[in-house]
Length: 412
Image (cartoon, rainbow, N blue to C red; front, side):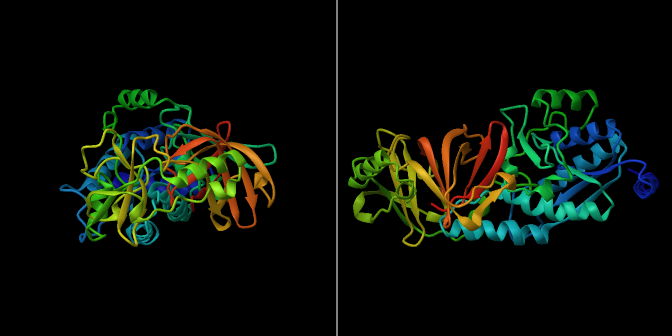
């Protein structure tokens, strides 16, 4: 966009905002097809639209990839803004992103936990720092290209609803949002299928129409997490131990399942080196997460090895053969009281209350029936069926039909 055009649109934005002729919305243009179509749809609906690209990383001490993905994405976002005839600017949030997301992520992995940077990015960056920046421009709303929907109850509570496209539903990534964050949020493509979004982008000749979905970290680009971690967390050789499926602690666990004691069932299995056989070596327990199958380079077993526990203090990875290994499947989890979050505070459980919900513990996982038990120390979730790969640091999210009601960081 030429400088004269930008100044014209900037003046128009100021005029419309000041005299409230149009509602202003700032769209987080990521350089992808989803946010591009979101911006187009909002303009069609009559909003005064401003495009903004979030630059979240430029630390030259860490090599993200051989190219500069954020520059490519920023250029694509600019081209979309030019095509749509909307003002555009880049917002440098790299300092906040490093402090709130990257530093926290490294600390969690080093402690043997598995954080979800995308959930944190939405809570801490898109709907906090970015939201405040949008409001400073006089915006009434912020919008993203998430596949989710927002409605409102009769008593004024905002509801976060799963996206219409069940294969792309991204409500899980927004599981930590508050009512204040949802209030100004718009999700223009939440009612569409991905194929419909692509079709609209093609019809409007948007440069992002055929662009592949990003597989990298939130608004950073094509970075692969293992590569990123290895540049910050130093390699440290340790043992890979295979634990047999007939370990006595597993029989005891089956007995507890019959009793329904969710407090005991939520406790993780504790292993010692003597519980199994050494099958190989790894370069750092902090690089691995429970449920992981790849990256161990250990062969010769009838069934694939899965990580069932990581001990970052002793630098040992405990593994078990096959997805049905009892060390990989548990019946309950625990979330500390301070980490329990209700998107719908009017539905929050009080101590000694319980409720039935559908729960997932990772993105795209099938929702599972569960009962939530609230106590002073925190929330226990007892599943109807065994759950595979419960990992401390990840988020459990609970739904009432298609509405995401609350979430929490898994402690054990």
